Length: 171
Ligand code: THU
Image 1 (tube, helix red, strand yellow):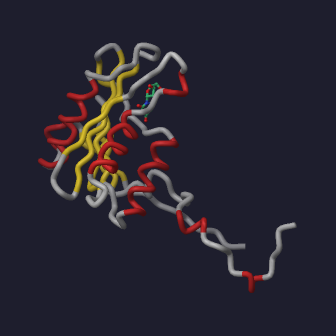
Image 2 (cartoon, helix red, strand yellow):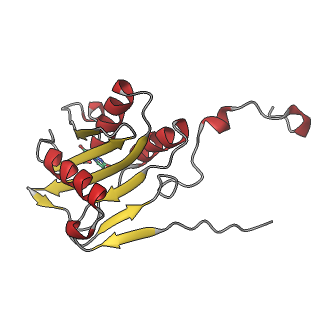
């Protein structure tokens, strides 16, 4: 038996004005698009802004549906649009904001598990870490990679055929 410790590093800022300029611009875009979310069922408005390697910023917000599971989170709306239109441009960063009743959430907004998985795919696909900026009134969190948000994630490496010489058969 062996034990491994996995550590993540989270930087916290008190206000948007303390952020480095690129992060500040991206977060402003996330805040702007949050206000345009379609969230009549939850009343929880989320906005995401994705910075690409080509310099473009792509925004998205949550799109809900009366058939609840047919809706989609802000992060994936933005990410999938970016990947669909700029398949050769790596994702550099994503800023996420959220508001309830028009007021920015207190704690930094946390992306759901499915969005973390989708972001992890982009990180592996482009072999480039994605900076993550999570907005909140109490603080703004910044992480250097999605791997920090989703350690031990499932990825294309896990789909490879196992080495038969190890000899453990699944019956
Ligand atoms: N939501 C997002 O857009 N992103 C997240 O990471 C968390 C949740 C949306 C989905 C749904 O429209 C609403 O917030 C409430 O869950």
